Length: 103
Image 1 (cartoon, rainbow, N blue to C red):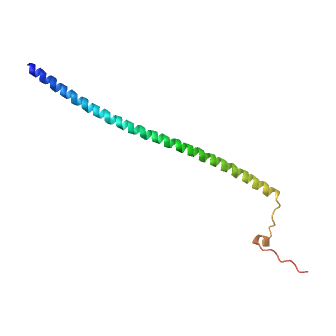
Image 2: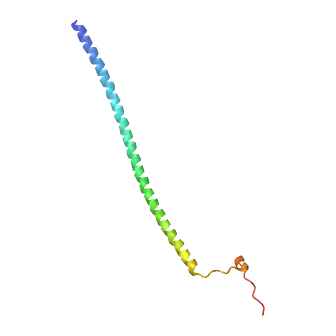
């Protein structure tokens, strides 16, 4: 009887030991997976920060170019308003001058 109880105890310890070993292996694998995902997340956040910086720079360039375009348009409109209107004759539009009359 004593040997039967001892055999049951040894078998129970062996089963519990095996279960503990499997659990520790699963925990180790999960820790490695979490570390890999964390590293990937950090890399994505760094890439996101770089892209946000680039977007900000491009937006500033667009704003600057838009302001330059508006000022150039305003300057062209002001120049067109102050300069005399060009002649609208057919010969002048064709790019040839009319011949001078002979006296």
